[in-house]
Length: 118
DNA sequence: AACCTGACTTCGG
DNA sequence: TCCGAAGCCAGGT
Image (cartoon, rainbow, N blue to C red; front, side, top):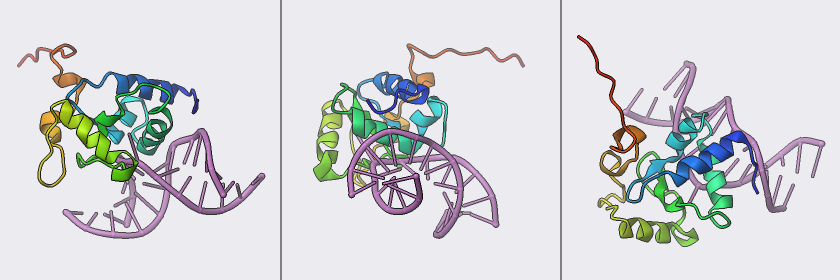
């Protein structure tokens, strides 16, 4: 196991909660796990745990909405898995994060709204 | 035991 | 806006 730090535990939990058909960025996950500057560590965890654990690793992309993983190292597979989930790629190779980016706040099942008095 | 290396981002100038 | 530096930290050399 690669580090059972609190950060890594949170990271795994967060990744597991990304809904099918949605994607999240490394930095976003890092921030949600408590350290906005540990994006690289998120990547590292994915690399070491994607095998052993059954993580939806394909749902993590970089901040541009692109796949960071080298095509021959699994990036190609990642793109296919995402397409099977309904995620579409633009010509630029980017995923529209506005459309497919996951945010708990935009998830109807998890969202809440605080009435703002004027 | 240093030093290098990443599936990355944020920071400061 | 743009670019280099800094932060992250476990594994491999």
